[in-house]
Image 1 (cartoon, rainbow, N blue to C red):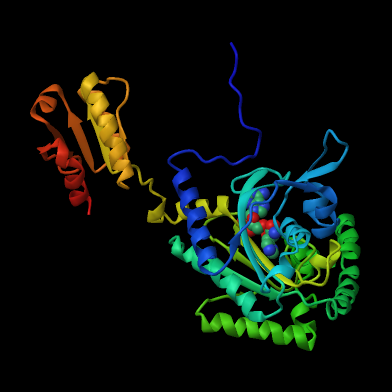
Image 2: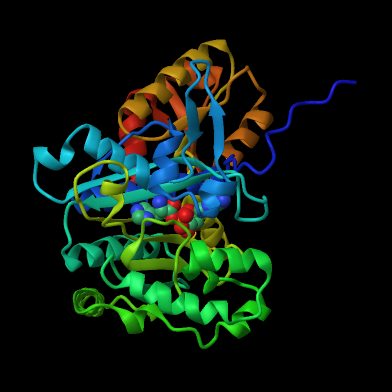
Length: 421
Ligand code: HAM
């Protein structure tokens, strides 16, 4: 006996009816980003490995443990994108978008990203993000704008239980001094070897450790928020003031660190309380040094990536109405060969008139065809038998109420339009 193929471990797939929620989330985001003046980017799924190694940072888990890296047939080291930001900045620099028009360059993208993580509910090896970036401005209003777009996107999907956590990670002026203070504090603690090594490479990440024994020890650790320089503090206060103006509630989270190296100043994460261990449904922040890290000119930037998979899980957990599959409005039921030709033409005409329609194929008997009509979610069935053809009419059946009446074939489109409006 041969067994059928299975998808690789840890990938997320969207099949009907769940795929309707995925599409709703993606399209809602597209509309929100477009409304705010962000243009669409379609970027490659793979890039030069060094782009991520340098951009995201060698010391991050993403680069050191999770990348899908391989040598292509030309001997180049290629990596499937683990995130979008490095590729977006690469594309802006390569195509000089920052020199062609107004700053900031405002762009968004959507698609799969790849991380070799331990697969579990809400954590996948191929997952989907929408990503939005504003590149070329330090204005705190841009920070607030990006956060507001994400917040309003979630709200417009019907999600109500979301929290926004906010922090500032300082800049190249104030963070080194803080880092040294933090390292001094951490070196005096009783920590395992791997964590001690982390103190030397990426001490801020130790604050983010979820293990209770580490949490207890770092409870009194010095926090970046108390070590910001005057510029970073002013920037942070302005972002908070603007969010307050927009009635967007947030929680100050002085331990919010984020897992990618490029962040500075504003950082934020969206959490959903019903998602268990993988509650982070989106996150982002400023990356004012990233352009230089990958060989470009100084070009500040801010943006976010929202996990579409976790957004769909949150929609399901909150049972938001937009996740029900829309289906079609009208379903054609032909009885006999000639009827099939006429119904086929009618269904096509309905679609051309902007009305969603489907039909029963394969010369089914009335009972089976009507089962198809019920399953389709249509409001109306259009039934055509030999007697109807002879009479020049069709039967229009209200599938919810059960009423059925004959309509002249020539008028059916207008009648359906009238019924649906
Ligand atoms: P990130 O926090 O690594 O940020 O990912 C953003 C979101 O992608 C997460 O909040 C989560 O919802 C989702 N995500 C990440 N990994 C997985 C996974 N293995 N399975 C399912 N969902 C996942 C970034 O990627 C940054 N590039 C965001 C950004 C854009 N910052 C500035 N601009």
